[in-house]
Image 1 (cartoon, rainbow, N blue to C red):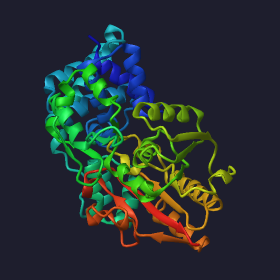
Image 2 (cartoon, rainbow, N blue to C red):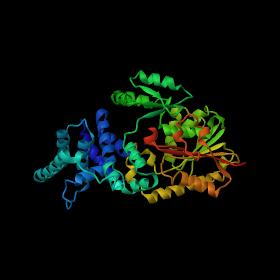
Image 3 (tube, helix red, strand yellow):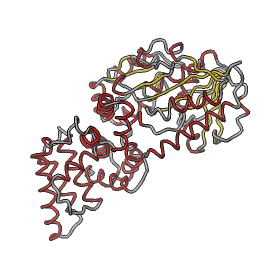
Image 4 (cartoon, rainbow, N blue to C red):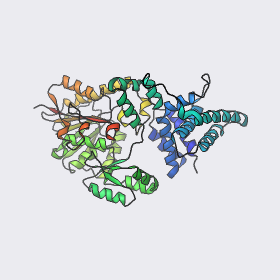
Length: 459
């Protein structure tokens, strides 16, 4: 059997020296170590958990380590693994967590040095076991930035930004919700089947699914269903997720295609299309009639998009490889609608991608807003009068959302906002902003944070 904690440690060490995503690092480790079944789930839980709670774990550990003592990356990550199990994994007995962690630290050392290291690791983790859960963080009332940053494990600059723009209550609620593991959601391929039929077929595998409360084509799962997924077996799970009649996608993302009025369109362009979630949804809402041109700057991502289109039978999709910020987009002058699902910080997806919080800076977010504006500006030049442009992100940052749209409307007064409510009549009112935009938050709606605006070029 694979030593799950050893594999998790190797993943953490790789991530500490790389900007590669957690998913790709973990998947690579699974292949290298030939990991399967329960070991996969444990490794996933350890790696994602340590990354998610990294700042809190370091703060707790530092209470029991001499300030002058320097830890190398390996031993810092070993201690994080141990502390995470003690503080956040109820199913792991404390004695087992400590023993396995000590073994990680000493397995590659000589005996004399190993005994000394074992003593150090054991002493720190025993202290965490006794006192870690009762430590007093900086007070919320007097120092909300450090309280939230350390207790909920977020970069100080992000917490400070959210406190300034959203307030204490919102920041606390958002950070807590974004530390939860995101539930699985599926979009039903309505060209092939009905939502109730998908729910019935999943039930036949012991998985209880219910209709999404916000997405017309969505299927959501409760905790019992997730447990069923965990115990269904690797092959059964693989068969379910590779079915032609479903697509794994967050419910918030399922709302965006409706803003393009796809049922009435004959020609739609998706300018930042990969990996194809919204592209394939548009194809299904068009009944595979008309034409969609899916554009992306990456040939590799376009290849993946094509694979997804084939799997779910999205047959009216053509592809082009180009940089939509500066390419000649003359081909889309006859398009009824254009989607720009822009590259963004991804702060709305922290439940799924906890590493994002550590890999982004304010300067990078500002740079992304310039790319987003360039996409809007270049696309606007080629859209016919009366044409529709939908701008969306998976961010919760105003600088990437309302700020980009408002800047665009100021510079291009021939464009106007059309209220998203007209196209999303069944969603909870809180999803629709006073300006007519769509905005979701994990703590308010139980889905990823996402933003979308529908714009029309005046005739």
